[in-house]
Length: 409
Image 1 (cartoon, one colour):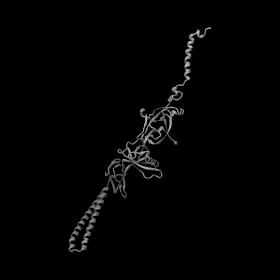
Image 2 (cartoon, rainbow, N blue to C red):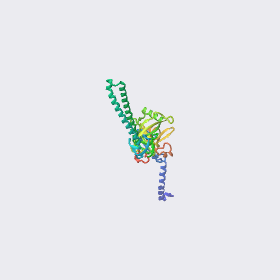
Image 3 (cartoon, rainbow, N blue to C red):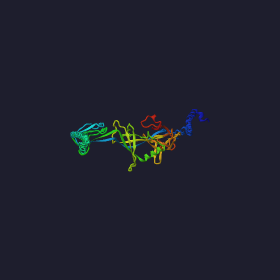
């Protein structure tokens, strides 16, 4: 009996067309895709997760410390009334800049002018007496040699001359004192600076019994900024510089930057003037003072600020974004992406901050890639999962600006 395939050849041809795709699919299931198990992707065919990295580049990095401080005028002078009387006139505009010697107030000078005139008259009388006494002494001198007068009369004439000279000297001092008191009636600025509000008004009686405060002048260019630092940190920094681990910033003087309360940095740098010789027993802090130029008067005395102090420079150091460093009680670590795409935890030594970045002193080498972004993607992945390293872009920066992490100078 003939077979079905003999009788129906078209049916057999169609069945072979249906079976061929099924056989090919079964064969594909029995073989793994080599690309799926390569180092670029995890098993199962999923693509390797992308993580942001920076390529480290060692260099000289200034070690900065941010400390709280307060601005203070470099010179402060209280303007006081040194002559008693009625204040007649104010000669300045409140809040303006004044020069040393500039007239600020005028006090009623009539009594002092009268005292000066009286002293001048007394001086003239004393000078007249001196002229007469000198003439008598000179007339007696040849007479005593001829014994025309007694020695006692000549001695008395010389004494009268000396007394008259002393009276003239006293009268001159009285004239000088009266002139000084007259000058005090015109109150002048002792220093150059910015003057505040007037503390008294016209018509007030000032200088009666005490030197009445009239105004305050402050020199605001330059300004001082006073701040404190832990004595422990200061000693640690000093030992590191003595050991050669760090070098001083600048020519032995630390660079100072003032940060305002809104987080902006004042444009003009300052310089450290001195560090106190003693440590506060209550706080364990050392007081430091820096000088900051303030030509436009943008900074005001009494303002609380933050001080960024660069006291030393670390050689062959690296700066990293803060999110790249994991800080724990056991130490500081970073995640380094190897050539095989796998992540290695690496302990590092942190030396402080610089512009919002951690300064790494030890633990990394040039050219290594440190993971900065993408930690959340690895939480659901098994340990040892390879990753794809891409250059990290800081928020708000151009994509091509973050291929590496250069050291700040």
